[in-house]
Length: 106
Image (cartoon, rainbow, N blue to C red):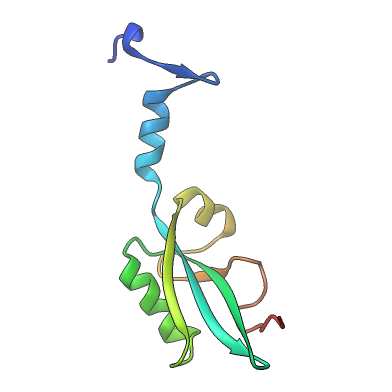
């Protein structure tokens, strides 16, 4: 156990606890798809339950993106967020809560 004299506290939480929580971050990815809609570029974000960024991009390319679309993993997302949204491993949801096939008009 850690000596309490060595523990730093921030807003009522030990930094050691926050460090442990940060190690669990990154259980999924935020992946964006840049596509054209009505002659304009539209970017849509997807939360993908895949640890590996390349796998997350491949899931979106295989299921959502068209050949000409730009698909990029831009960030990590926590396991907690994916759990709250009910996204099982290997699956995804749109970041804005819309059905995956919905096109947002710019």
